[in-house]
Image (cartoon, rainbow, N blue to C red; front, side, top):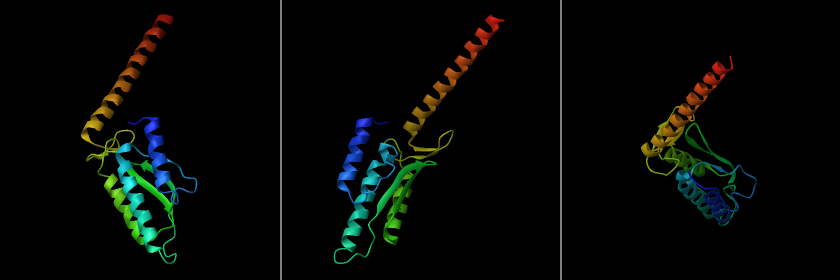
Amino acid sequence: MYTESQYEEFEKRMVEAYPKMFAEPYGGFAVGPGWWPILETLCGQIQHHIDWKNKKTMIVPQVNVAQIKEKFGGLRFYYDGGDEYISGLVSMAESWAACSCETCGTPGERREGGWIRTLCDTHETERQSTIKERFEDKDLQKSILEVMQGEAE
């Protein structure tokens, strides 16, 4: 995964690079680091398009990010402003994320079983191991509880 300091560094970098896009309160970046390069590319392309189109007069409304998150294994980029070109950029980024591991950015696929995630084979194996460990711990806890209840009777 990533550390809190890595997240804070990424968030600071994005807010400093795109202050107009993140001027309003937004919900943070609720996605894994594998998708951060996708977001950096997307925001760079959006702001470049707006700045280029609006050199002489305001043609394209400034994009203000409302929320960026993972939902059902996919990237969701919610915003106000922009135009059809920016809508296409967002669709492309969401499609790119749909086939990229949210943890590391390598090719991935949608994985079900509990929380739906887009992961590569390596990170899916890690996730399944974690799930199995938690399940085994619950079975152990249940067995201990049953033994304790039997001793109490």
